[in-house]
Length: 201
Ligand code: SME
Image (cartoon, rainbow, N blue to C red; front, side, top):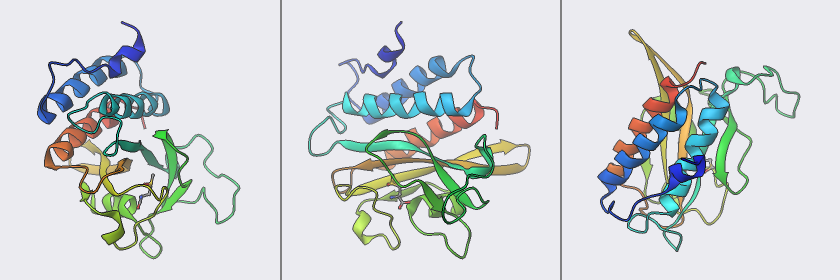
């Protein structure tokens, strides 16, 4: 099967639960045999984004469309540990923009307790998925795209025995208020666990 067909959504899929099961199954096949995080996160963001746009019962490509899907990853996992940029982007306690689909987005997100701000930082620090039905009502929300109305962010949690390490976050934006539901939360958390365990960090 051509790789692009991984984001094809059969018309027989109508419920969100079936949709997320389908995307999960596609990703299991797509990630097989690859352990490089940048490669796997790139294919994961593309598969989720394009599958959502191909699923009219969810968002489709109209006013309720998902307009961004991607990852922010702890700077320690980037191949160049110290990136020379203003504000010391390569220092610890920052998430750097990783693979994504959608319009350009902010390059990094502070997660140090003194400077942390925004949905991604909060999900990373709390190690929990955050469902934001109205981004303008969320204190500290970082607006990468003024058209975004709602957002969901799931942490990428690597579990090794009793240790939990958060390596980054999976972030989705939507053009509509209340674009994401508890079903999306469950689907994305399952995918976040799949992709984080499919990579060597
Ligand atoms: N809104 C996010 C920033 C990332 S963009 O949405 C792609 C936040 O508040 O952390």
